[in-house]
Amino acid sequence: MPRKRKETPCRVEADQVSSPRGRQRVSESDPSPPMLAAIVGVEGPPRGLGSIPKEESDMFHSGMDVHSRLTAFHVTDGAGQRLAAGTIPTTEDSLGEFCRGLAKATHFWLEASTSSAWVARVIDANGHRVTVVDPNRIRAISGSPKKTDASDAATLATLGRVGLLSPVHVRSAETDRFRRVMTARHALVRARANLI
Image (tube, rainbow, N blue to C red; front, side, top):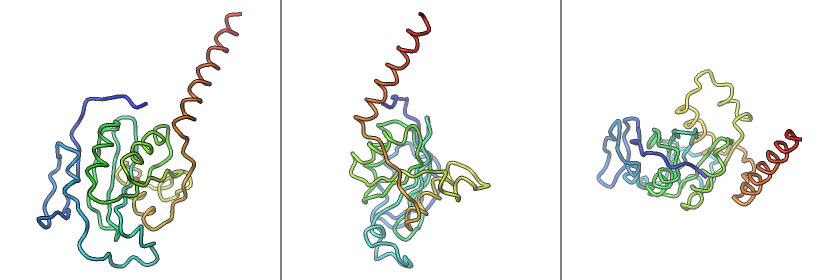
């Protein structure tokens, strides 16, 4: 289970986002993850989508590069226009608040990692779709000369939106608990064998 950490401000790149009051500027460092509540449905149908399925074009897409302390995110609309990007703390509360702050159904794309299983469960519990992908199969990420958290998140959102990412299996919470018990048992058996 994730550790609870002291909340840090949500860092967001200055960008234009749609809001009920029209276009507005997002500050460099917004103190609250719900700043995404200002991002509402885009007016009119998305343009230039080619062969993207209708259900994918009607939702937001968010690439997330998850690390132990901070998670980089990049949110786009169905047409691929950037709505927001930045970082949030990697805690269950921050991720839940981030998900609840999105005004539209969102498809999240995560790289497989040690924390991707519980992050995927938090996103799913907040009513959004989530797909975990193997970063080693994505040459645009693994072979990129510009390897930053922000660029990885943007690449995940872009490739996921157009259907170029393949999912990997995500373990259930019950399977995770069973694996922890078996790991602890294995360690105890090894320690006992070393004492004999």
